[in-house]
Image (cartoon, rainbow, N blue to C red; front, top):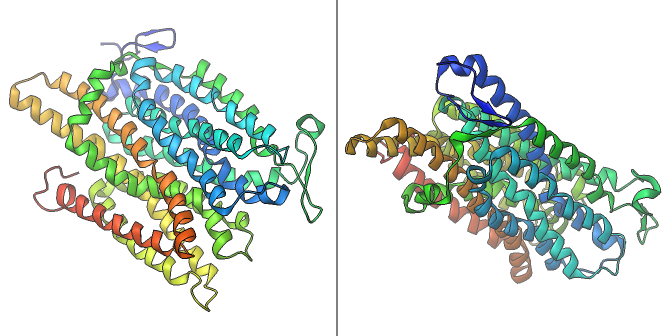
Length: 463
């Protein structure tokens, strides 16, 4: 059998990543090229998804009279729509092809980016328009599910922890990039008169909030073209919805969704709500000076988590991640302002940096668990029934990719619930403590699930 894949245009008809000779001679090069294009496209998707986390703190400065709860809604809505879109995006790659869907979904991000650039230039723009833009920012959140599903098909099982960790980890950097870049570009006329004039604050400062949206447009165009002309579709990844829908009958699909809410849901939720949380709890601190650091360390920790998972095991790492996350949230509570105490901002930051690092590692470890769980389960079923093990391996790949996408969809609801929990807790009790205690209770359930089904001696699906 030749080690050069049969192809028709951009469609590869013969893809055998588990064949060592095929992988070494041609597979690795093709997979790495697709990964190299996928990463910046996903980074931009996260940047657009989280634009409002960096924009909301500046809206009141230029004349938008929105309440604190309304501003928290704007940071939360992209998480809600992004998570919902991920449910549908999870199944798109096997239906449309990874190359085609990556190009289309990347191009769609130009809509909220351009609309935000227009809307912020007029302080009379109604709140409903910002709500609509925030919902459309969820298009960026949806991209993660299809991107991760697509990359999972290209790599052998032994390298999926690394590949998914690189794609997700460097893609997640888009959250930090948007929170670092937007404060810089809104302070200067990056595009000159072409993008419109400045908005003037009450202190006489000139801001160019339109750049928060416009800055991404040239990069989105470049990534769309790179995906269309540089990526591949895989015939082996093609399947219809019914082939993938079997995951809804799999218990471990729902258990992994729960765990992924705890890891990725925490990462994206903390990222979305971090600037506003700093602003409300430590008003003397410039939130945007520090907010990007959390998503940065969390994103950088994800590839490390992928490597650690390959070495130590996904269940082992996931279990201890949740244990340490409980401790870190108690640390955040300790350093918050309370009563006459003004709190300790740097202690608060340190605890949140630890939380972000743990979420990044946990993002990778939970994704490392999924292919192993489903491969072992489906191959055991096939062996018990005397079925075709080769077909079972293919079905395991399809189901694993679908679960990776679907669990990322459910996990992304954390991007809505965490900032909204902050807003509700502050509105009802005057502080975020109630929300944080709720997070601790949730992490305890994650510890129990991981230990019982995946980590303890005699667990049903050790991984």
